[in-house]
Length: 79
Image 1 (cartoon, helix red, strand yellow):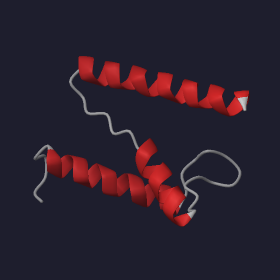
Image 2 (cartoon, rainbow, N blue to C red; image 1 turned 90 degrees about the horizontal axis):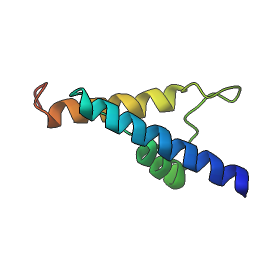
Image 3 (cartoon, helix red, strand yellow; image 1 turned 180 degrees about the vertical axis):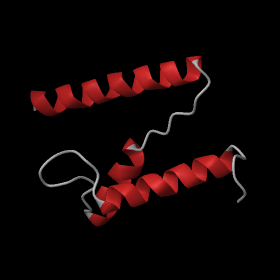
Image 4 (cartoon, rainbow, N blue to C red; image 1 turned 120 degrees about the vertical axis):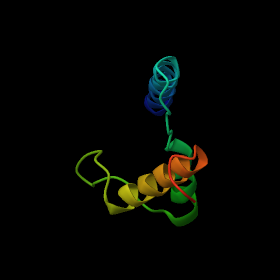
């Protein structure tokens, strides 16, 4: 419904803002939205706590993997 659409629009706006700011100041922005969505769709895994939006162990694992891959892709660490 409208609430879900509003959340999606707000997420897109926040991510666009982060992309713009990180690009402007020479930082990398790792958007995990697609990673979380794909893994949820495939395995039905939750990535946040049941009581709030903080990541649980699954969320931390996925974020760590994405960070590792990004650091390797930009040659910040060895592959």
